Length: 227
Image (cartoon, rainbow, N blue to C red):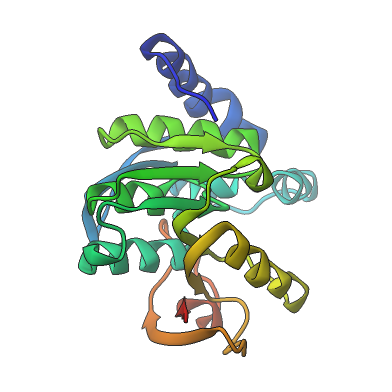
């Protein structure tokens, strides 16, 4: 885990808004956007306009090779951030691990809701750049890690959004138990997973921001809490 100086943040912000996003597409840009249903949070997210045109086969391959997932606020993260802001008692005065942090939206929401510490954990170094820049944008302090196994202290709560993808990743649920006293999971990819130590507490219709026009199946987000 590491801290970032003001000078480093300025450099990372410049990197984020040019080089990193253009690894996805040469026309891609990011801008500061306020989340409509979380008005206390603003994020550097991809601009829609340059991405709403037909792409060549080569451009499609480039996007597939580097989808810059950190430049979107995915539906599950969006819903989870809203849920935490509505239920601050889940995180107040607690240490939080945000596993697969992406843009850092949920860790930021946790800090706004009164968390003592929030550790943004992501194996993608570009995502951690995004987390640092977005944390500074929202005037909160996060901690950062690229390896959940390197986080030694057990957290009070682990939060994770859209990290399951397929049923093979359900093994993460057991890992989460080892890293935190409780886990809050939001997922739109695996429908109604069954695990003896997790219960579904809410289902919310939402969408990724900016809206990707995803299938309706991916707009249904389930929230699970460990028991």
